Image (tube, rainbow, N blue to C red; front, side, top):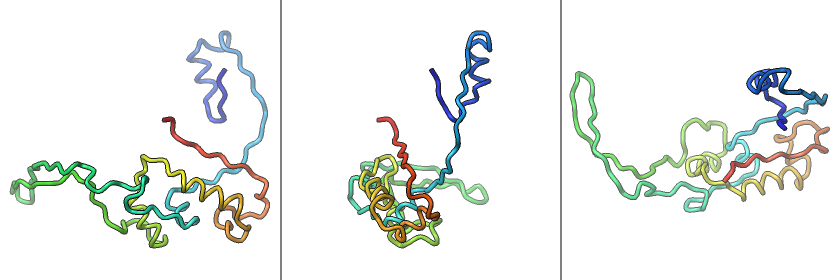
Length: 157
């Protein structure tokens, strides 16, 4: 049994032996509007801050102090050797987040996206479900969206 809103049924049917071998049942339905928000949007809307040293922050010294020697070729073919640290280094306020709050820019510099931030998920759900409509206006701009659902996708662990 395969169910999907986006699967190419004809291609799957052909792969598994064609029309004679694979019955296809189509159930009519309706689509719902979906809005995509990125991590920096949710950090901005909730005011959530990824603190330095938190479980969800990149660790300084992530490379365990290891260094490597690189051969760098410059203009004119000049070759030089440089030592580089494998430790994680990041700016406190990375470029590319103009228009976001300073706290959001700091959080984006610190965040380890490989770690599920359950506190941020809680903050987003609180904003959606518990805050007054005026506060969640950026997240739900239409007044008629008070009776919707929330779907959170988490990676398999």
